[in-house]
Image 1 (cartoon, rainbow, N blue to C red):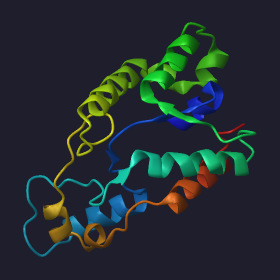
Image 2 (tube, one colour):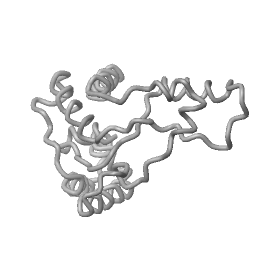
Image 3 (spheres, one colour):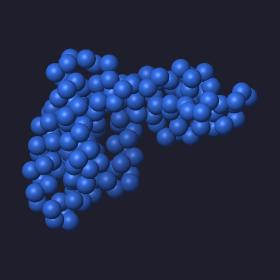
Image 4 (tube, rainbow, N blue to C red):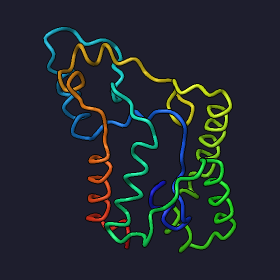
Length: 175
């Protein structure tokens, strides 16, 4: 939603902090690891990436891949989340169906405002020990003990970001 909207807005948001996004195949494998573990599983297991990645580490390669896929003619600049939100709010004033289709983040405007507020707070505090958007980083020690998938999961990289763009293009997101 953020990437599709950013194409129309002409910029990608830059947020301070980490992202603990976990690839779908890793989620499904980790669930199977927990379900078939020999020991009784705990009540809850945090299935988030055990090695979070800095937001910009993924967003810049997304910007580059969008050019390669001709979704944009130039790399979208990364702008502070609050600046990106201003562009989103300005676009939200024109609530035609075409606008909603091109900029689906309008449907999540309150959530995006919350992310922008959290980003402002993180920037002001200069603390980088939190999830982008203000969430606390989750402990993953239990998940890593129970699930070999989680224990061996590599950090997300620019190659992962490029694969996402490949997938989005295959699904027609840029049409």
